[in-house]
Length: 376
Image (cartoon, rainbow, N blue to C red; front, side, top):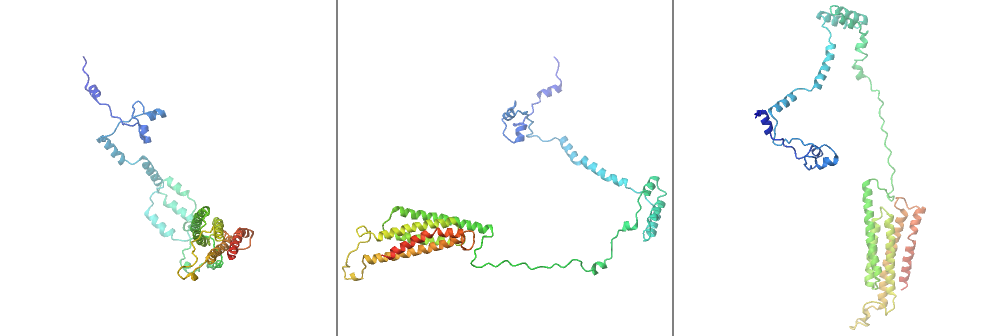
């Protein structure tokens, strides 16, 4: 029987590496993996290769890996080396051989300080100083173009006194006064100029519409109840006139058409309630619902009491006052409708006249009720 080598024994007893619980595809997508070694559900459905890497839980890099990492960090990248070499190359090419110190001293003192030096003298000076150098350097110097002192120094004017003495050539700026905006009269309505004002106006209109709808609902419920008691109907009419006056005052700035049409509905409801009051007051004695009336006071004060005629006159005066309140409210609504929501003045335009004519029937009905009450 052959004896197995130590290498084969160690390989046979080495445990299999522990794999991760999720495959590479699920780890990259950051989704939950079923963990099937033959292929997880996601990889099977997508038709991709299901590969599991070795788990690195509890393992630390060895000393060799640490050394390789330190060496890779210490070595500069190849791109930086190539770039540094490329920057050093032009410096080596542009190197000029050293010239004699005496020649350089003679050049600075004799030639460059003279303002009448020509280009030919400058080229001869360069050729004489570079005679001891190599032929390549002398040929490169001879190939230089002719350069004059004017080209080297330029045409700059270094006279600093002229800068301070010369006046400025810029023309003075004439500031023309701005035209003042046209003055507006106090009575002329102004349109909203900013979005904030528009938002406030829109919120006011919506609140007015909601309040009008509530008032219309309440008045319609009283009309449907067919009340025949004066002491109940009259406070309803009075409260309705007060609420209508408040809503009209809130629409002085915007004059929204939705609110104006709802005002028209409220006026017709008040007219219906006023007609109900008139019907109660003119009902026959057998059908009139009023307080118990005992003829004579019984205590000697019967001369200071009031009879049915006095009671009827008192009620008629109160209802007539509320009728006048409704008529004045209609006049205010007509004025707002004539101006309109477009902030134009109350000019007799076709649109403004048509809006005003919508309230002619309401005025006529209020006048009829007032005439009937005065005849009582």
